[in-house]
Image 1 (cartoon, rainbow, N blue to C red):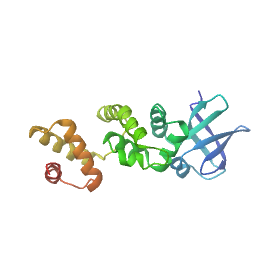
Image 2: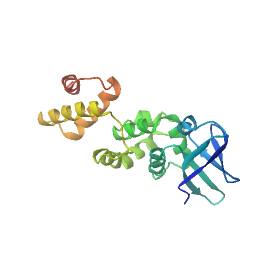
Image 3: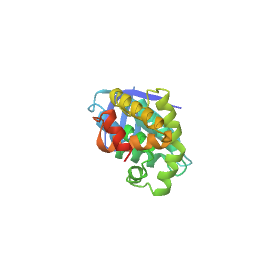
Image 4: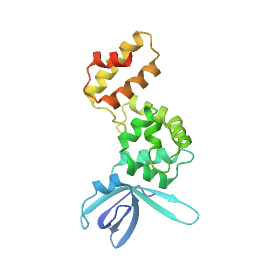
Length: 197
């Protein structure tokens, strides 16, 4: 396995880059997230990689951030999502947006990505939401969906809703939907009122 490639950026395209490492050029497929984050041609660049081996080809996929590579690996573990589809997903939405959609069970957002149908979106949510929630609870650095101030507001509102007798999973889903729709500037009281509607 090739963990990363560090060298001079010899060619930069929306779909792939070529990184020159001591005279050897590695062609690496990338997402638009990575494309936007990479330096100009001729500058040194480090790309985290995943080597995908098929019968007819060995393909390197590259990511500017390790977090993006981790999400890519999670996505290709889902039945029906191949490496190219996962790359399209990472080009369509940011890593944080994909994680948020999976955790909050937002089928519509996942399905809005080209090549993802309703069944695949639902399967991705079922297979990944618990893993991503667990990463969020353990404070994994790969999952930073909400800034700390809004996380505090969300947690206080969640505690209040659970105290009022609303099941925790229902309250979490409701709060995540509200925060996504209304933004992170709500007070605890506003959030609770909206969740109780």
